[in-house]
Amino acid sequence: PVEADFIKKGIGNSLQCLNVDDTDLPKTGFKTEMIGRIYSHVHHRSILGFKGLFLCHTDGKTQNMLDFSLHGEESKNPEKKQGADQGATESKLQQET
Image 1 (cartoon, rainbow, N blue to C red):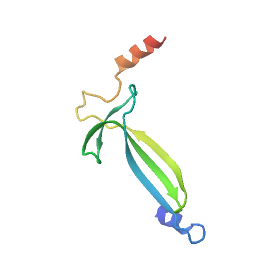
Image 2 (tube, rainbow, N blue to C red):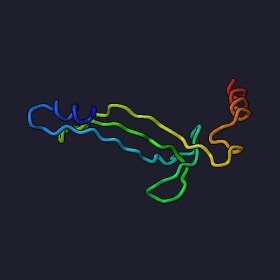
Image 3 (cartoon, rainbow, N blue to C red):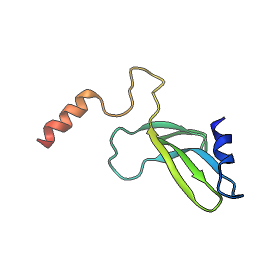
């Protein structure tokens, strides 16, 4: 596996490790675009926010972020989409011009 090769190539005797984390990013503030409901495994219920996926490398002393991504979850009801619909987006753009 890639992880095993990565750990073996560590510097000296230091342990090298890859961390993968999925974090709930709850809504804060008044206005947030493209936000939706996500299932929180911490609260065991739906919350308003995003999911953050992070890949980090650590040697036991320092931690470096290698990659990240933000995700929303699809609604169970296909007629009820997460985020702004096309009409709301067009209305917002007309207001700004």
